[in-house]
Image 1 (tube, rainbow, N blue to C red):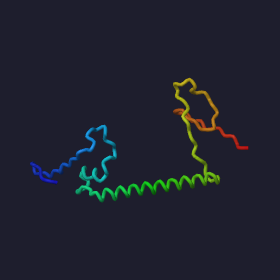
Image 2: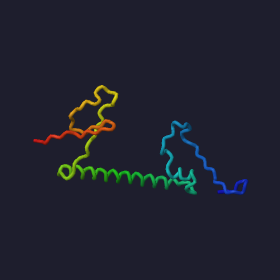
Image 3: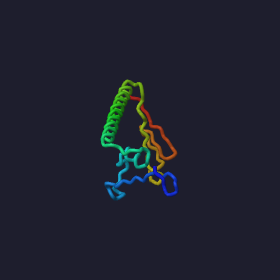
Image 4: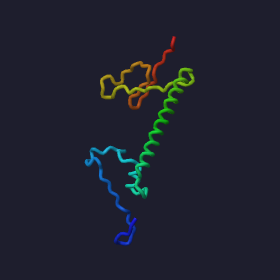
Length: 128
């Protein structure tokens, strides 16, 4: 912060020169969070290279841990399904549109179906 002509405190202007000079080449998330925070004045000092590397490593580690937990959860769900403890999620399929010729014709299906405001549960036949 510095004093302006009127004697008021003025926020320092921070500029960035983009590596990709045209707007259409910008990809969201291509500016690291740390630099974005500095540009927007949410932090006083620009990030160091070490900080950027450390934070990137941390984020990758979190992604790996999340993937491992998700895989473990899916394996547990599959095991519980095999043991008959839980049912799998129903897969609802949208069948056609009101403007199609086949709209409104009833078809018996094992899968539940939906068309806008209607829902038809799937048919079920016991296994022999």
